Image 1 (cartoon, rainbow, N blue to C red):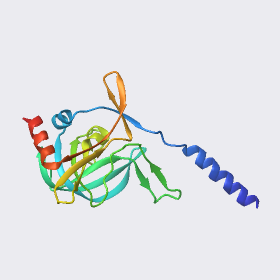
Image 2 (image 1 turned 45 degrees about the horizontal axis):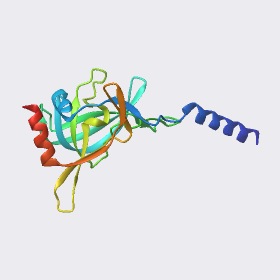
Image 3 (image 1 turned 90 degrees about the horizontal axis):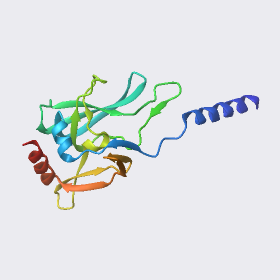
Image 4 (image 1 turned 180 degrees about the vertical axis):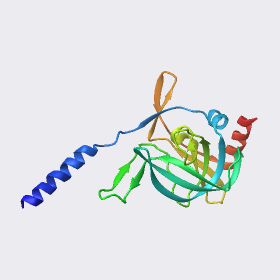
Length: 184
């Protein structure tokens, strides 16, 4: 009985130490033009794998993306994209790190990515503007491709104020034409 009580107290202490995540992350609001101009690489690709790794004292997820098309820069056929957060399940007590509103890539997901080099990691580029630089690609009932972006978990700072992010959807061809216009 005493052993069970000690175990329960230790579990409660661990839960309190972990705390609860913040409701949102604040990022500087970027326009599509700013994303396009500041990106080192703009690529369309499909995520083929994800793995978590330690970057100093932080967990990151490294997503492998098979590049289908490059709109800016020169991307290899396969690139590694570094995302904030991850899970280390190999530890005696598994550890997870998350950031509300952080960009994610799931295996099999197709996305258009605005990527920038980051000196803090040698594993690969990061997504520009936190979640702002990741657009998921889907198909409608007629088979036409479109891009979507969900920024509802991000608070965006624009000038002196802040605003909650929104969801957007646009035909892929229209979005690619917009980005090409910003690059000229």
